[in-house]
Image (cartoon, rainbow, N blue to C red; front, side):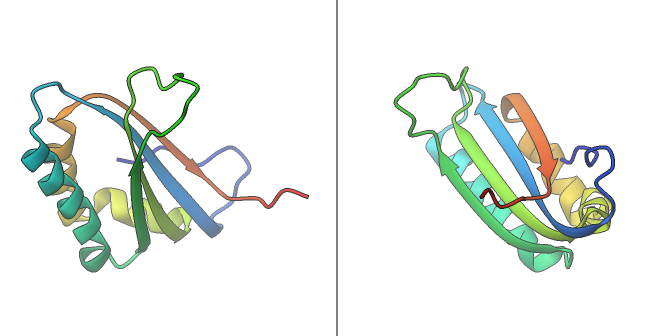
Length: 115
């Protein structure tokens, strides 16, 4: 579950991989918990994946368009994201995960501090 890096972004430097999801209505809380555990477990299986965080929408603006969950993975480079995308553990997990989603938005970006 990865998107191509932005134009002119080069390969080096930290990359954040965001997966924003609307799950299918029939996904049970137990199934969702298992998917989140499986996603978090990729950190121990995919060497290029350095960190994982997730959360649910808490915005008061009601502009989520049905997306409810955000998953953020950290990689040291765009090459690390590419390794992750093709890693057998990720491929197996992604197939299962995507089968439970209604909509998915994936964005890879290099964080830049604001002044």
